[in-house]
Image 1 (cartoon, helix red, strand yellow):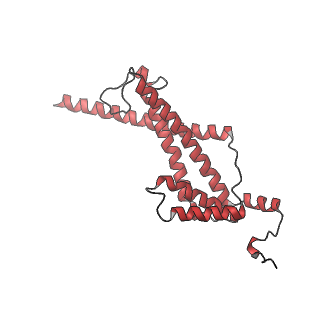
Image 2 (tube, rainbow, N blue to C red):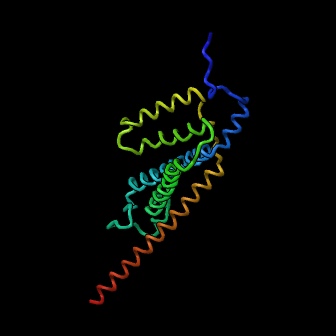
Image 3 (cartoon, rainbow, N blue to C red):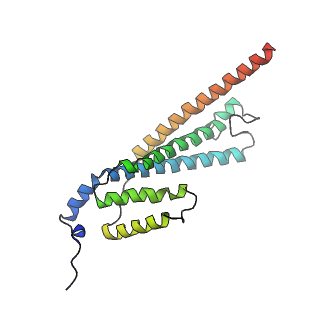
Length: 203
């Protein structure tokens, strides 16, 4: 006689109803936001890398940072591929990655209400292993093993579709924040230079 499955693994409702219930799981909403934040940060990283490459191959654009001894002219700094755009892209990527990290930090505060929600939380935890020193150390391989077991039992996460409008909106949000930050840093640097000049003239 075949062994009876544990009651916890016996579906009491049909698959469609279970999927509908799982989609309301706060952990699934969290992992969806986390995936989007990481995707946006990856896009912004590519933009930043492309701009950095343009600066490196263009001898007419000098300096990558505001404190560089050789600054580009104001005209060049505002062209595509100039130091200003590079700095904005770099800061925008930081904003996006910070958002992803904040979502990771909120994992303990979000209660999963389904097995697929537990899988979602573990996906985020395992996905964070690239940010640690050695992903082969305990407990990372062990958590990955548990995640594989759960997926074999309950299935993987629902495949989410990224809306282009949402992606553009998120990129624009981080880009705008970065533009403001870079402008503020530039204004602060110019104010410090004026102060230094005034101090020299005072003596």
